[in-house]
Length: 442
Ligand SMILES: Cc1ncc(COP(=O)(O)O)c(C=O)c1O
Image 1 (spheres, rainbow, N blue to C red):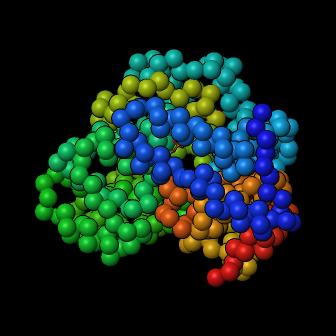
Image 2 (cartoon, rainbow, N blue to C red):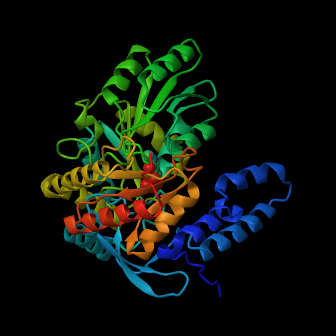
Image 3 (cartoon, helix red, strand yellow):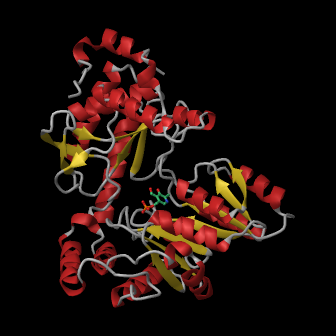
């Protein structure tokens, strides 16, 4: 049985000071990547990683894969991996920004479809896995994103990989923001296209990149995210769109964190920037504000038909279960018919950001529900996560290499379900942590 070597906060300075120099606690996932390059044994790295995670867990420094034993709304019951007890925590780690995963209408739609269709689709969509509910959801998504047609994939990850790898080939160029999501990069790697990058949300850098590749062979696809998943900032889509058109390239936007959040009625980036119908490929997921799982791509009908036959992640994968699709359809209707969730989310964003910024916390350029609180050091970020955990707040720690060095952070996800009391409690605890760990010294 692993014993927790807890850092007791009120006599913490020395203990933290000692632990701070513990190399085993300072190890990051990047260290294991380096090790893989230097080793010829496939599994030696797994053994070392296993041991490292055991060690970190015993110090409360590995707060990943925590087990929930209730729904994941503004509160969740969470199992303590060390003693097996459960405790109620304020949930600040869910991307279900509108709380639609627990909305009664959405749950009922899933229940009815479960009774009607059973639990699975039974096949990929081109064989026997395409149901009336899939067709209906595709049609509703086309309306939401103002495009001709849409297809649904098993996940957002599969959508990016499946679309980019099916459309691009080795003569083409994929132009990416430096903070692009792994699924976009993986799609590019599978396509064997050339990569060109630009600095995050930097339009001068984008134009330099577009100029550099303009005379290359093949087509060029620029992929950006409506809202960036680690910083919560918004891509300047109007400027990006103008530049992409100027250089005669194609544009794809990943709306994972923008759908249900941006735009007057929550339709996403295109509504926010008044660009409906103007972007070549609009990708989204059901796993964030729409509360479920699955992904989709919207485009002109010829592109969608091509993807149905040539995108392996669509063609060779079983369809989403009809009950899931029916629930997503209902979630879309709730988004459009019950604007109070979208309004509440924005009130929560405004309150949480204003309070934390006024206390001196670094939230980067976050403008949305994703709220990074930058700590700037892997060890400290883990200590603060643990402190919050011990005080009943569930938040995700995002250390290097998931973010650049010195940008280690806690990533708070805001929801329409959070009450002002929930958020005030989190702010109070963060303020306490700032004193204990000397977080605001600069
Ligand atoms: C920007 C972005 N794109 C795609 C994905 C993948 O979506 P999913 O988790 O639905 O597979 C994510 C998920 O984290 C994301 O943040």
